[in-house]
Length: 339
Image (cartoon, rainbow, N blue to C red; front, side, top):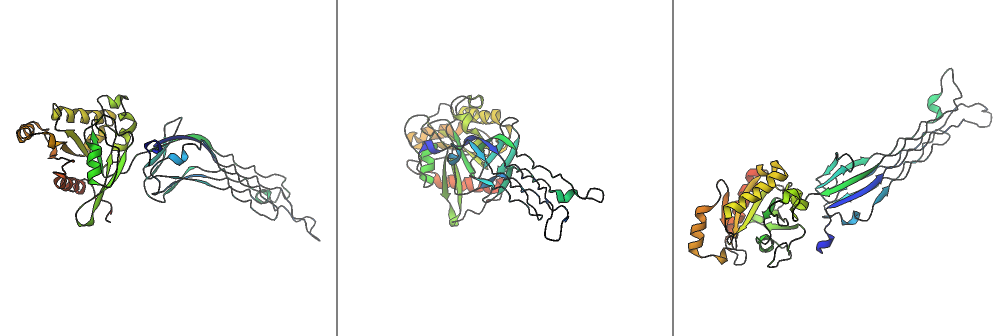
C-alpha cells in the first residue's frame, strides 16, 4: 500500500439522529365514540457507533467523510404504535483507535478488539405519546412529548498501532532493513535519512510456530518531543508497544549518548514510555572490525540488554529474536499469535 494511504488522524463532524415526536391520537371506532387516548411513542434517533475491525489498518476510508449524520426517529402513531427508530451509523475503525472530543480533548472511546462497539453519540429519545398522560382528572390529554434532539460534535480519531515490539531509533539507523529481513514486510529502504515516512508492521516468525508483531516507527530526532522532525507525529504509536527495541548503528560516534538521547525524547513526550521493557540492537556490525566491536562493547549503556546484529549479513538475528521473546514473555502474557 502506498505510504500516502496511511492515515492515522482524522477530524469528523458527527450528528446523531433526533428522536421522533409522540403522537396525540384518540381511539375512534364504530360504536366507540370516546375511546380515550392511544397515541404511540416516537422512535429513537440513530446512534453514531464506533466499531473495531481487524481488516482495517488505517483511517483512510474516513478521511473524506467530514460530515456524518444519523437519521431521526419517526413519530408515533395512533393505536399505541411506536415510530421506527432512526438508522444507526456504524464507523469501522482499525484496532488501536482512540476517539476524542475536538473541543474539550476528552477521550470518548478506545477500540482495541475486533467487533467491539462503542456509542460515540447516542440518538435522541423518542417522545411519549398522549397515552402516557391520561389520568382520572385528565382523560383526554391533548399533549405528547416532542422527540429529544440529537447530539452533534467534532470528533478526532487517532490511530495508535498495536504491536508487540516497536523499533525506536534515529533516521537511517537500519530499522526498515531489520524489519524487512525479520518479517515479510517490504518497507522502503534507501541510504538517506527519513526514508520511512509512515509506520510499517511486520509479523516475525519465532520458534514452535510462535510469532510477534514488530512496528517500524519513523525516525526520531533530538527535539522530536517538541515537534521537530517527524517524531511528534508518530511517537504516539510507541505507546502501544509492549517492548521497545532501540536501534543504534555501530558507526555512531557515541552509542551510549545516542541511546540516552532517544530515551530522553520518549521521557519528554510521555514519562510512562521509559517504564516499558527495553532492548538495544547495535546494527550494521558488518561495517566494523572485530577490534571496533570489542572497543564498543566497553562503552555500551548500563541496565539494558544489548545484541549486535547485521541485517545485511543476517548475523545475530536469532539471538535478537530470543532476547525479544524472553522480554515479551516477562513484560506481559503474549496474545495468541501462533500461526
